[in-house]
Length: 132
Image (cartoon, rainbow, N blue to C red; front, side):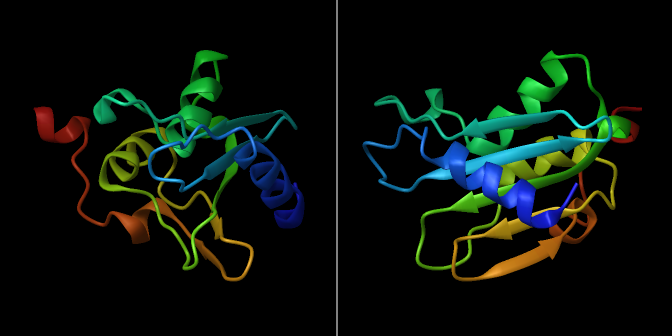
């Protein structure tokens, strides 16, 4: 998997965003080690909590197809914003459970790019170990 390829797939997915309220489009692409890809886009709703972010959409699709964190090579998350976007708090929590700590997370808005991982984005995550 090439970084450029996963970012291109995320930008293509962003075109499917439904963002009539915020006008802020997000696309995501999960690359699995076996060569499969799962895309997602943000879907808004007039009842704001009923929407879903692009990265959760992609990761949930990946898991719904039977993949787990060990199967994921990387995720790309792209936005239409003027500045580089990063996952919201809810998405960081989901990614902390659904990705290995050092799985690459590629971020881009078409102008800026950053590579990170969930360990950097959410260093003190809440996990199954906290449940006892």
